[in-house]
Length: 120
Image 1 (cartoon, rainbow, N blue to C red):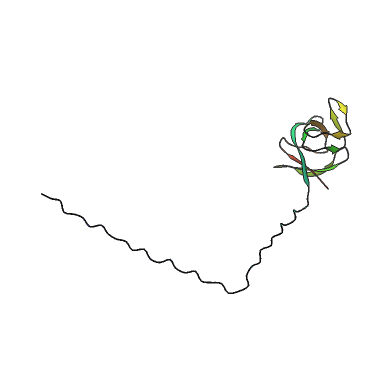
Image 2 (cartoon, helix red, strand yellow):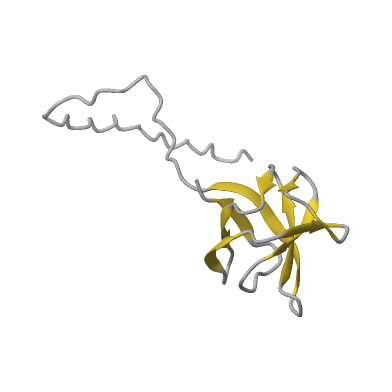
């Protein structure tokens, strides 16, 4: 006994609806890139903080001098300060070199991971 052959159901696709054109002016595309916004430039981040003496250990990503105005920005920290003194191996230094971890005296408390921005 043969089984009855089941016919396949054919589904017809409907044509896609046409989008309505907007009346108005055409937008002009500029080929020149936009100028970047000037603002504070990142110059390092806090790797450690000594609460008793109020000194932050900062790893600098570019050279920074004593007297530079910086902004400390973190999850709970946001203030501006002037770098008063810097030390490397317990010796005062006038300039921090890129990539070194330097002890910096700041006026307020900072936390590990806070970013340091140079104010231009």
